[in-house]
Length: 481
Image 1 (cartoon, rainbow, N blue to C red):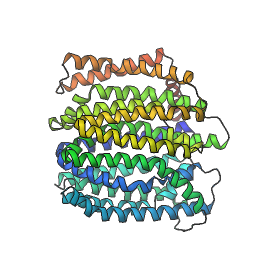
Image 2: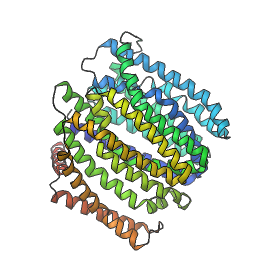
Image 3: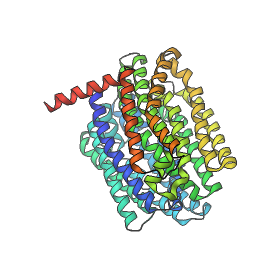
Image 4: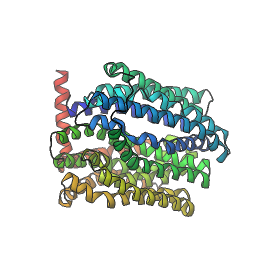
């Protein structure tokens, strides 16, 4: 299956996932208070702090490895099972501690239920990793869509039945069970319970590097959220988590799905000793053309967006969302950093960079929360994104064989696209003096006009995304014929 067809499948499933996730988030947020959301958020952050064990990224090892044998697959399964079991135990024990620290029994109840999900996920890694290696993204996409549908349904029904924050924990567990069932149904030929430690050195070397890269970043982020909840309270954490969730909806549904598919293709190119230069520049051009306008639009319309989606009790999340969206613009400048470093086997260097970045990020966030409250914490995320560019762009240029002269024109075109896209929204907010209660039809009109201006600018700039659109249209036309 070609990369474009994989993208079509993944994008289709992600659109469904986006609709379900976004709709669920709106329903849950409107029905719950910031404090209730904060209870779930602190439980999720504590779980995330301990879940650094899962940043071994063993699924990526199955996709990346040039030669894959049964002993390696069995070793990956065994070590992953051990890590997930340990995680489940740690989360369950921590549930008692967290309930006391935050003087809220609900935090402990949520964590005790969350602890079950890692045990279920043990049986997902082997078939999911091997299906991705085979570029069977249609099956992965259907599993993701099924997981989202079940998780959303259970969560909404639970909230409507009066189970408050526990509904989200039950939805999380139901989604995990569904994903395991679907992935194993599609990849039944890969299902096995064989245990082995024959290749433990290879797996542990890769995994420990991934923990050092992804784990330290997770530790910094989650620890910062726990500090914020402790300093400013659970209601404040609830506001911050809703702003972060809206930001993640865009990042996860455009950036993550794109990089997941492209990672497998880049790994294949690397196995064939091909250069990553042209492929990376194309990815950077398309990613910034899509995400810069989206994030810039969210930053400008954060007030009406939060007011319309969540209601007036959540308006405090709007300025936080603006700062996080601007951070998203900056982070897109160094897109696919993790994937490139893994493919080029430069994870040792990334470990050093991530340790320095994580330390600075936690310092920014804690200082921002202490001296600037919620807005200070959000501004700290912007500072972290700027730091990431300074740290990552030089080695990224070397690994992708790109120069400043290569990327500046890309950034220039994407800046014009973002400017054209947000101009109507900016004019609207100036006209209403930033009033978050601006009528929906005016917001919709500004967004629609922005999309039109973005498309016109795309054509005038002769952007490579236009060629991708033509290829997609032609493929769809052939499939209908």
